Image (cartoon, rainbow, N blue to C red; front, top):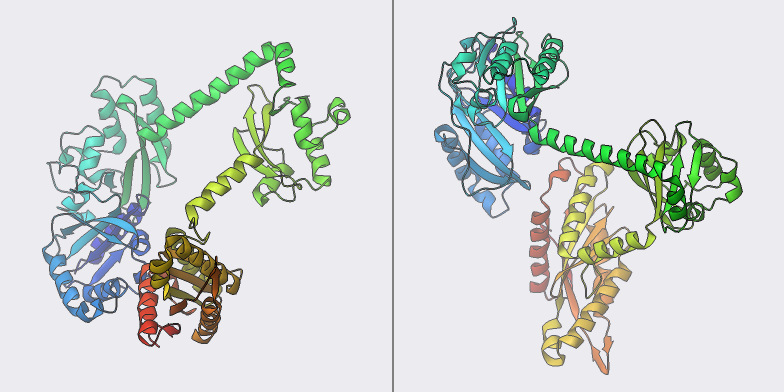
Length: 579
């Protein structure tokens, strides 16, 4: 097992890796847990509250597989655990797998003291994994507990470990590449500001204004491990530095390349500057502007540096239902907002919009929000600050646009024939409901339904008649279901229902009986009098601890299995999974 002094740096490194969204878990020579970070518990929530120092890796694996295997595969769990332990001990190359909807890239590396460290990073599944090459050079100081850990060279962000006197004890390959070092050993014993100076001096830029600004930032932030800070690098690059103290005085630093983020910020600043310049040109041509504004279909208002509404076109008055006399008195924006508030104009708006309108209306920044009027009209309000104070505000009636967007979302989430939720939307609703089970302490049930006798109807009378039968069945299912339930067509003649707030299987069975009764009634299509039945499989999700981690696809498989039991028992009835 690692000595106590070596455990703390690994735990502190794990805490630092939390800032990079990298999970870490360390094991001793006896395959017992030593240390782990918060990201590890987020990627593998089945371990939350259960993993502890000294726990055998086999127990860790058993929890992992218990939440991944179905009933059939659980018979082989001991074999999977044995294989997992062997892979844990022998695996050196990176690999990838999928867990709880995450694509995880995993790496493993032995510890010099015995044992092993494993890290996981979420990302896209690739045909091959690519990592930065391992830099040559000296190993880290043994005091860090990281000697020979090529594992951390595979992390794309730079890592640095400093002693109490701020001298560098160890860096990874990404740090070497980021700061233009020849090898990792050349950084040992130096301070970070010396490394920073070298990176600029190597390009003859050590008198550059950006370098001097970065040196000042380092001087102010390297005295203690405080908030993250950003420093410029040569060739237009930027690094964000995140520090984490260890119990023994060692400090771990993560260096994240944020060049692309800075580029986007620069482009945004250019866009804002362009907007201000455009506003300046508009002011110079105010006579032409005012004439144009009166004929626009968009509301325009200009607020001066003192908060007075200096200009408001005809369309803005119409959209806000304001009188010309009110604006002729040159009110302040605060007075206009108070007038609208007294009329109850802001009641239908979201709380965050109301809170902003209670203050200054948000004139100090470029932003946009939707406001719903009491009559249902949706107004899109955009604010552009003006250099020197004040702002330009546009008001647009987007009621029709938002309704069209809502229709598009409805088409994307609903079955075209029956107007029920489609499979993808139902799975999304199911995931949300499962997550609410423990928080609300209310059980739920999933009902998987398949029509009995539908194929003969389809074969004899054709698909047009069959489609009308499916539409009528969907209507009956919707009528029986409660408003808070969710009904979906999964495909063909298969349907599903999410029943919220059900305490036990008796409540679900009573609902199923009503569904069977409703569907079994004759259906009139043209001159035909048709009849179908329905078999229902039920799976319960009680309000028990751990319910929120239930696999939604597993729930559907279990409900589907119970549905086939109902068919085998004579059709047109319901069965509860495991009952």
